[in-house]
Length: 255
Image (tube, rainbow, N blue to C red):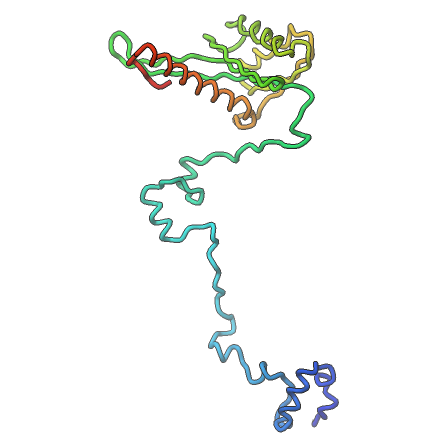
């Protein structure tokens, strides 16, 4: 069957640029079954590239955030400094996702919060017989959000039963900062000793005292008291260093 070129729908619908290209090659019209533009004529991608029917594997660029093989080999020698892309560094020194600070209107609460927790100061020394000994001092730390005051109470034991003076001192300090007759939220972990202390503080108060507890095994959920305890430990070391320097003592040991 012979097809008239004017009856071909490809020609009737083709853009002007293709029609001009077709007219330039009318001499070969009778030998063609299809009308193709100049760039596509006689081009077979598989024959030109020599690729099989499955095609070539694409070349994927390396993620710029990941190291090269050379970088990994060099890092594996010492694993210094810490690298988040190194699985061994993450297992040895990795931390949980940081606790994000709440900002905006949700960051402000009309009810002040009082954070409580215990920290410990330990020291390795020698007893009279020259044997190694370790001493420890338990300290209760309180941080309130109304005046941002920070209090530390050295105690012999955890809980309220063995340290009744600690309960009275906390109530007195809350009165001092103006929270004696104000509603407060007391936040602590789920340790029985600190929960018992919180209950003893709440009972004699003349204002409502709500309880809030951090998640089990997640100290980062109460980051305020964690930072406060670190401040107490740092200042204690600083005061001790200054005192021993004044006394010209040579018995300095790290807490």
